Length: 153
Length: 153
DNA sequence: ACACGGCGCGCAATCGGATTGCAAAGATAT
DNA sequence: ATATCTTTGCAATCCGATTGCGCGCCGTGT
View 1 (cartoon, protein in one colour):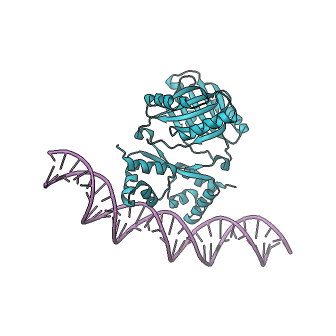
View 2: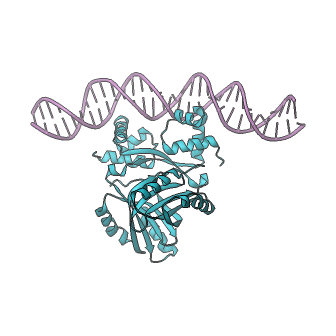
Protein backbone atom coordinates (compact mmCIF):
# COMPACT_ATOMS: atom_id res chain seq x y z
CA UNK A 1 0.00 0.00 0.00
CA UNK A 2 1.21 3.44 -0.93
CA UNK A 3 0.79 6.19 1.61
CA UNK A 4 0.72 9.80 0.52
CA UNK A 5 1.33 12.83 2.70
CA UNK A 6 -2.34 13.07 3.65
CA UNK A 7 -2.38 9.48 4.89
CA UNK A 8 0.70 10.18 6.94
CA UNK A 9 -0.89 13.22 8.50
CA UNK A 10 -3.92 11.10 9.38
CA UNK A 11 -1.77 8.39 10.90
CA UNK A 12 0.33 10.83 12.87
CA UNK A 13 -2.79 12.41 14.28
CA UNK A 14 -4.40 9.10 15.18
CA UNK A 15 -1.24 7.88 16.85
CA UNK A 16 -1.45 10.91 19.12
CA UNK A 17 -5.18 10.70 19.66
CA UNK A 18 -6.89 7.57 18.49
CA UNK A 19 -10.28 9.01 19.22
CA UNK A 20 -9.86 12.29 17.44
CA UNK A 21 -13.12 13.26 15.83
CA UNK A 22 -13.32 12.97 12.12
CA UNK A 23 -13.99 16.66 11.54
CA UNK A 24 -10.87 17.67 13.42
CA UNK A 25 -8.87 14.89 11.81
CA UNK A 26 -10.01 16.15 8.44
CA UNK A 27 -8.88 19.65 9.32
CA UNK A 28 -5.44 18.40 10.35
CA UNK A 29 -5.18 16.32 7.23
CA UNK A 30 -6.29 19.16 5.01
CA UNK A 31 -9.37 17.43 3.66
CA UNK A 32 -13.10 17.57 4.08
CA UNK A 33 -14.61 15.04 6.48
CA UNK A 34 -15.93 12.46 4.08
CA UNK A 35 -12.80 11.59 2.12
CA UNK A 36 -10.91 11.73 5.39
CA UNK A 37 -13.10 9.10 6.96
CA UNK A 38 -12.91 7.01 3.84
CA UNK A 39 -9.13 7.09 4.05
CA UNK A 40 -9.23 6.04 7.69
CA UNK A 41 -11.44 3.08 6.80
CA UNK A 42 -9.08 2.08 4.01
CA UNK A 43 -6.11 2.31 6.34
CA UNK A 44 -7.93 0.09 8.80
CA UNK A 45 -8.90 -2.47 6.17
CA UNK A 46 -5.39 -2.50 4.76
CA UNK A 47 -4.09 -3.26 8.23
CA UNK A 48 -1.95 -0.15 8.38
CA UNK A 49 -3.93 0.77 11.45
CA UNK A 50 -3.77 -2.43 13.45
CA UNK A 51 -6.02 -1.45 16.32
CA UNK A 52 -7.02 1.30 18.69
CA UNK A 53 -6.24 1.07 22.38
CA UNK A 54 -6.74 3.04 25.55
CA UNK A 55 -3.47 3.70 27.34
CA UNK A 56 -3.84 3.60 31.11
CA UNK A 57 -1.80 5.46 33.69
CA UNK A 58 0.02 2.64 35.52
CA UNK A 59 0.24 4.55 38.80
CA UNK A 60 -3.50 5.06 38.83
CA UNK A 61 -4.18 1.37 38.66
CA UNK A 62 -1.53 0.40 41.16
CA UNK A 63 0.98 -0.92 38.68
CA UNK A 64 3.72 1.64 39.12
CA UNK A 65 6.66 -0.61 38.44
CA UNK A 66 7.61 -1.56 34.95
CA UNK A 67 10.77 -3.59 34.66
CA UNK A 68 12.77 -5.59 32.23
CA UNK A 69 13.91 -9.15 32.52
CA UNK A 70 16.53 -10.71 30.32
CA UNK A 71 16.03 -14.44 30.12
CA UNK A 72 18.47 -17.21 29.32
CA UNK A 73 16.96 -20.53 28.32
CA UNK A 74 18.44 -23.97 28.85
CA UNK A 75 18.36 -24.58 25.10
CA UNK A 76 17.43 -22.80 21.89
CA UNK A 77 15.53 -25.59 20.15
CA UNK A 78 12.05 -24.97 18.85
CA UNK A 79 10.37 -26.98 21.58
CA UNK A 80 11.99 -25.07 24.43
CA UNK A 81 11.29 -21.73 22.82
CA UNK A 82 7.70 -22.59 21.93
CA UNK A 83 6.97 -23.71 25.44
CA UNK A 84 8.49 -20.52 26.78
CA UNK A 85 6.54 -18.33 24.38
CA UNK A 86 3.27 -20.00 25.26
CA UNK A 87 3.95 -19.41 28.92
CA UNK A 88 4.74 -15.74 28.32
CA UNK A 89 1.57 -15.25 26.30
CA UNK A 90 -0.44 -16.48 29.26
CA UNK A 91 1.14 -14.21 31.88
CA UNK A 92 -0.69 -10.90 31.95
CA UNK A 93 2.13 -9.21 33.86
CA UNK A 94 4.34 -9.78 30.82
CA UNK A 95 3.37 -6.88 28.67
CA UNK A 96 6.07 -7.36 26.06
CA UNK A 97 8.11 -10.40 25.13
CA UNK A 98 10.80 -10.69 22.50
CA UNK A 99 12.93 -13.63 21.51
CA UNK A 100 16.42 -12.23 21.10
CA UNK A 101 19.42 -12.91 18.97
CA UNK A 102 22.65 -12.41 20.80
CA UNK A 103 23.45 -12.20 24.45
CA UNK A 104 20.20 -13.19 26.16
CA UNK A 105 17.51 -15.44 24.70
CA UNK A 106 14.52 -13.30 25.55
CA UNK A 107 13.62 -9.87 26.81
CA UNK A 108 10.49 -9.19 28.81
CA UNK A 109 8.81 -6.09 30.05
CA UNK A 110 6.89 -6.90 33.18
CA UNK A 111 4.39 -4.66 34.91
CA UNK A 112 3.76 -5.01 38.64
CA UNK A 113 2.76 -2.94 41.66
CA UNK A 114 6.13 -2.92 43.42
CA UNK A 115 9.24 -4.94 44.08
CA UNK A 116 7.45 -7.29 46.47
CA UNK A 117 4.94 -7.97 43.80
CA UNK A 118 7.75 -8.67 41.34
CA UNK A 119 9.49 -11.03 43.72
CA UNK A 120 6.24 -12.90 44.04
CA UNK A 121 5.78 -12.92 40.28
CA UNK A 122 9.26 -14.25 39.72
CA UNK A 123 8.97 -16.90 42.39
CA UNK A 124 5.51 -18.22 41.60
CA UNK A 125 5.38 -17.73 37.86
CA UNK A 126 8.71 -17.21 36.14
CA UNK A 127 10.74 -19.82 37.96
CA UNK A 128 8.05 -22.46 37.48
CA UNK A 129 8.44 -22.40 33.74
CA UNK A 130 10.49 -25.18 32.21
CA UNK A 131 13.43 -24.15 30.12
CA UNK A 132 14.39 -20.99 31.96
CA UNK A 133 17.99 -21.15 33.02
CA UNK A 134 18.58 -17.65 34.32
CA UNK A 135 16.87 -14.29 34.63
CA UNK A 136 18.51 -10.90 35.03
CA UNK A 137 16.18 -8.14 36.06
CA UNK A 138 16.87 -4.57 34.95
CA UNK A 139 15.07 -1.79 36.74
CA UNK A 140 14.38 1.59 35.17
CA UNK A 141 14.71 4.55 37.49
CA UNK A 142 12.93 6.81 35.07
CA UNK A 143 10.72 6.53 32.04
CA UNK A 144 11.96 9.14 29.63
CA UNK A 145 9.72 8.27 26.76
CA UNK A 146 7.05 5.76 26.07
CA UNK A 147 5.45 6.62 22.79
CA UNK A 148 4.37 3.69 20.83
CA UNK A 149 3.96 5.95 17.84
CA UNK A 150 5.91 4.99 14.76
CA UNK A 151 7.86 7.79 13.06
CA UNK A 152 6.44 8.38 9.59
CA UNK A 153 9.27 10.15 7.81
CA UNK B 1 -9.43 6.53 43.07
CA UNK B 2 -11.23 3.32 43.82
CA UNK B 3 -12.01 1.05 40.91
CA UNK B 4 -14.77 -1.50 41.20
CA UNK B 5 -15.23 -4.56 39.06
CA UNK B 6 -17.31 -2.66 36.51
CA UNK B 7 -14.56 -0.08 36.03
CA UNK B 8 -12.08 -2.84 35.51
CA UNK B 9 -14.26 -4.47 32.90
CA UNK B 10 -14.51 -1.13 31.13
CA UNK B 11 -10.76 -0.62 31.25
CA UNK B 12 -10.01 -4.12 30.06
CA UNK B 13 -12.36 -3.64 27.13
CA UNK B 14 -10.94 -0.26 26.18
CA UNK B 15 -7.39 -1.55 26.38
CA UNK B 16 -8.37 -4.14 23.79
CA UNK B 17 -10.38 -1.77 21.64
CA UNK B 18 -10.11 1.89 22.44
CA UNK B 19 -12.83 2.74 19.98
CA UNK B 20 -15.38 0.25 21.16
CA UNK B 21 -18.81 1.79 20.91
CA UNK B 22 -20.43 2.76 24.11
CA UNK B 23 -23.39 0.41 23.68
CA UNK B 24 -21.13 -2.60 23.29
CA UNK B 25 -18.89 -1.41 26.06
CA UNK B 26 -21.93 -1.12 28.30
CA UNK B 27 -22.94 -4.66 27.42
CA UNK B 28 -19.48 -6.00 28.29
CA UNK B 29 -19.47 -4.03 31.51
CA UNK B 30 -22.95 -5.19 32.44
CA UNK B 31 -24.47 -1.74 32.49
CA UNK B 32 -26.77 0.40 30.42
CA UNK B 33 -25.12 2.89 28.07
CA UNK B 34 -25.50 6.09 30.03
CA UNK B 35 -23.86 5.16 33.33
CA UNK B 36 -21.20 3.35 31.32
CA UNK B 37 -20.30 6.47 29.41
CA UNK B 38 -20.34 8.48 32.61
CA UNK B 39 -17.83 6.07 34.10
CA UNK B 40 -15.59 6.34 31.07
CA UNK B 41 -15.61 10.13 31.36
CA UNK B 42 -14.76 9.90 35.06
CA UNK B 43 -11.92 7.50 34.32
CA UNK B 44 -10.61 9.93 31.72
CA UNK B 45 -10.86 12.93 34.04
CA UNK B 46 -9.22 11.02 36.87
CA UNK B 47 -6.33 10.24 34.55
CA UNK B 48 -6.79 6.50 34.84
CA UNK B 49 -7.22 6.49 31.10
CA UNK B 50 -4.24 8.52 29.96
CA UNK B 51 -4.99 8.67 26.26
CA UNK B 52 -6.23 6.77 23.26
CA UNK B 53 -3.91 5.84 20.44
CA UNK B 54 -4.01 4.10 17.11
CA UNK B 55 -1.49 1.25 16.92
CA UNK B 56 0.04 0.90 13.48
CA UNK B 57 1.38 -2.20 11.83
CA UNK B 58 5.12 -1.49 11.53
CA UNK B 59 5.56 -3.66 8.46
CA UNK B 60 2.83 -1.77 6.63
CA UNK B 61 4.63 1.54 7.09
CA UNK B 62 8.07 0.20 6.27
CA UNK B 63 9.37 0.11 9.81
CA UNK B 64 9.73 -3.61 10.23
CA UNK B 65 12.70 -3.59 12.52
CA UNK B 66 12.29 -2.87 16.18
CA UNK B 67 15.44 -3.21 18.21
CA UNK B 68 16.87 -2.49 21.59
CA UNK B 69 19.94 -0.51 22.46
CA UNK B 70 21.59 -0.56 25.84
CA UNK B 71 23.48 2.64 26.41
CA UNK B 72 26.41 3.38 28.69
CA UNK B 73 27.03 7.04 29.46
CA UNK B 74 30.34 8.68 30.24
CA UNK B 75 28.96 9.84 33.59
CA UNK B 76 25.82 9.59 35.68
CA UNK B 77 25.53 13.17 36.81
CA UNK B 78 22.30 15.10 36.27
CA UNK B 79 23.72 17.19 33.45
CA UNK B 80 24.88 14.27 31.38
CA UNK B 81 21.63 12.40 31.91
CA UNK B 82 19.43 15.42 31.20
CA UNK B 83 21.24 16.14 27.99
CA UNK B 84 20.87 12.54 26.96
CA UNK B 85 17.18 12.47 27.81
CA UNK B 86 16.49 15.62 25.83
CA UNK B 87 18.23 14.13 22.84
CA UNK B 88 16.20 10.94 23.11
CA UNK B 89 12.94 12.85 23.32
CA UNK B 90 13.76 14.52 20.06
CA UNK B 91 14.56 11.39 18.09
CA UNK B 92 11.36 9.96 16.65
CA UNK B 93 12.99 6.61 15.96
CA UNK B 94 13.40 6.19 19.70
CA UNK B 95 10.00 4.90 20.66
CA UNK B 96 10.85 4.05 24.25
CA UNK B 97 13.64 5.29 26.50
CA UNK B 98 14.35 4.30 30.07
CA UNK B 99 17.10 5.42 32.41
CA UNK B 100 18.28 2.24 34.10
CA UNK B 101 19.66 1.26 37.43
CA UNK B 102 22.25 -1.44 37.21
CA UNK B 103 24.32 -2.70 34.34
CA UNK B 104 23.60 -0.22 31.56
CA UNK B 105 22.59 3.40 31.99
CA UNK B 106 19.74 3.49 29.54
CA UNK B 107 17.59 1.20 27.43
CA UNK B 108 16.07 2.26 24.14
CA UNK B 109 13.63 0.73 21.79
CA UNK B 110 14.33 2.00 18.31
CA UNK B 111 12.14 1.52 15.27
CA UNK B 112 13.63 1.54 11.80
CA UNK B 113 13.09 0.06 8.36
CA UNK B 114 16.03 -2.34 8.34
CA UNK B 115 19.60 -2.81 9.51
CA UNK B 116 20.96 -0.33 7.01
CA UNK B 117 18.56 2.22 8.33
CA UNK B 118 19.68 1.43 11.86
CA UNK B 119 23.33 1.76 10.98
CA UNK B 120 22.56 5.14 9.53
CA UNK B 121 20.55 6.11 12.62
CA UNK B 122 23.36 5.05 14.91
CA UNK B 123 26.03 6.82 12.89
CA UNK B 124 24.25 10.09 12.25
CA UNK B 125 22.18 10.45 15.40
CA UNK B 126 23.23 8.29 18.31
CA UNK B 127 26.96 8.71 18.08
CA UNK B 128 26.66 12.47 17.72
CA UNK B 129 25.16 12.83 21.17
CA UNK B 130 27.51 13.95 23.91
CA UNK B 131 27.82 11.70 26.90
CA UNK B 132 27.32 8.37 25.19
CA UNK B 133 30.21 6.06 25.91
CA UNK B 134 29.01 2.80 24.45
CA UNK B 135 25.95 1.23 22.82
CA UNK B 136 25.11 -2.44 22.63
CA UNK B 137 22.35 -3.29 20.21
CA UNK B 138 20.10 -6.27 20.87
CA UNK B 139 18.03 -7.60 18.03
CA UNK B 140 14.81 -9.50 18.52
CA UNK B 141 14.24 -12.37 16.15
CA UNK B 142 10.60 -12.61 17.05
CA UNK B 143 7.98 -10.49 18.75
CA UNK B 144 6.08 -12.86 20.98
CA UNK B 145 3.86 -10.32 22.62
CA UNK B 146 3.42 -6.62 22.43
CA UNK B 147 0.38 -5.71 24.43
CA UNK B 148 0.57 -2.43 26.16
CA UNK B 149 -2.44 -3.45 28.22
CA UNK B 150 -1.98 -3.40 31.97
CA UNK B 151 -3.23 -6.47 33.82
CA UNK B 152 -6.09 -5.45 36.11
CA UNK B 153 -6.17 -8.31 38.65
C1' DA C 1 -37.35 -1.43 62.40
C1' DC C 2 -37.98 2.74 60.09
C1' DA C 3 -37.13 7.23 58.04
C1' DC C 4 -33.81 10.00 55.64
C1' DG C 5 -30.14 11.22 52.46
C1' DG C 6 -27.04 10.34 48.88
C1' DC C 7 -25.37 7.83 45.12
C1' DG C 8 -25.71 5.40 40.97
C1' DC C 9 -28.92 3.40 37.66
C1' DG C 10 -31.97 3.23 33.50
C1' DC C 11 -35.16 5.51 30.37
C1' DA C 12 -36.17 8.63 26.86
C1' DA C 13 -35.42 12.71 24.33
C1' DT C 14 -32.00 15.57 22.12
C1' DC C 15 -27.87 16.59 19.89
C1' DG C 16 -24.02 15.99 16.98
C1' DG C 17 -20.93 13.44 14.35
C1' DA C 18 -20.49 9.33 11.27
C1' DT C 19 -21.78 7.55 7.06
C1' DT C 20 -23.32 7.28 2.30
C1' DG C 21 -24.96 8.65 -2.60
C1' DC C 22 -23.92 11.45 -6.11
C1' DA C 23 -22.10 14.83 -9.19
C1' DA C 24 -17.93 17.50 -10.06
C1' DA C 25 -12.99 17.99 -10.17
C1' DG C 26 -8.52 15.97 -10.75
C1' DA C 27 -5.16 12.74 -12.34
C1' DT C 28 -3.42 9.34 -15.63
C1' DA C 29 -2.64 6.95 -19.69
C1' DT C 30 -3.18 6.53 -24.46
C1' DA D 1 -6.58 16.22 -26.32
C1' DT D 2 -9.67 12.84 -24.68
C1' DA D 3 -11.43 8.97 -22.39
C1' DT D 4 -11.25 6.66 -18.10
C1' DC D 5 -10.52 5.91 -13.49
C1' DT D 6 -9.96 8.04 -8.98
C1' DT D 7 -10.83 11.02 -5.29
C1' DT D 8 -13.05 14.99 -3.71
C1' DG D 9 -16.87 17.88 -1.52
C1' DC D 10 -21.68 18.59 -0.63
C1' DA D 11 -25.89 17.35 1.36
C1' DA D 12 -29.04 14.22 3.30
C1' DT D 13 -29.61 10.39 6.37
C1' DC D 14 -28.58 7.53 10.06
C1' DC D 15 -26.91 6.17 14.36
C1' DG D 16 -24.56 6.61 18.59
C1' DA D 17 -23.19 10.03 22.19
C1' DT D 18 -24.90 12.92 25.54
C1' DT D 19 -27.94 14.84 29.01
C1' DG D 20 -32.09 15.57 32.19
C1' DC D 21 -34.81 13.35 35.17
C1' DG D 22 -37.18 10.19 38.16
C1' DC D 23 -36.52 5.69 40.57
C1' DG D 24 -34.47 2.31 43.43
C1' DC D 25 -30.81 0.76 46.32
C1' DC D 26 -27.72 1.11 50.10
C1' DG D 27 -25.76 3.17 54.21
C1' DT D 28 -26.63 5.95 58.26
C1' DG D 29 -28.77 7.58 62.23
C1' DT D 30 -32.55 7.53 65.44
